[in-house]
Image (cartoon, rainbow, N blue to C red; front, side, top):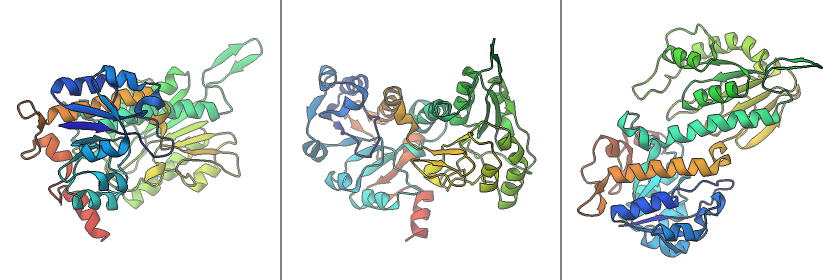
Length: 380
């Protein structure tokens, strides 16, 4: 079986789906491995490092035509899917709830897609959970970017010229990204507050040294997969009203709230942004799925009339591309290894288990995930 990785073509994407370390591990599984020339240039890894690990270095067109398994970071472009043979497998991000034409193209081309967004959130599958590994780095990078744009130092400083109070950082959403943002802001010396609709995360927030903000929005909770349940319009309005005072006192806000398979909820309204201090910074990690913040735009920096900077950044893991690539490549290796048949030296997809069955989005020309299929039918 020929496992292939080619360079990403999405602007600004610096991560790679295969490192020399994982290339070597694939070779030891019994696979043939090939990478496009220059694959590792964005993380300063030369072709020779891949060759030393046992991978063949080739050109894009011939690699795609011969691929049995294509590893990707960003969802594969339609022209890439068209170059794959029927029966080939892709493994990586697909964004299936918003990337409908790609899902249809994968099914039409009889390409099997292992969609990392659909990997079950179980203890055993944690080593394959690319959403979590990349969200963790996004949370870290969000704080670093916010600190760079803020006009205020994060730690408290006592100097002969006077005492500087610590920056006040408010993190909305205490999932993987939010918790890492909290931890990073605390390391930088900020005073951190955090909010999440799931009461179960309160202890995690407090264990990192942050204050958990209590808001009364009625009954809340989380799904079986650990995601926050979507709030009703009435609950969202109550949340915004109570959150406004916290936002007004914050120097930095980082929003991470997303609902699996749905547009992100609007949490910070235009009025709340208008009530913030000039020079305040907001980082909206949900900008690419609709945005938590009024006025945020994916991939752009917006400065409001009252001097608040809104960063709608969706490529934060790419800003720490070396570590993000190492983590992501390990996620993909663990996924492929889990589905690997040692005797056949190939993937076992005919009778998938809970993990592979959960993330096998398309196979044999069919769209297997009921939620994605329903979303496609609703927009047909």
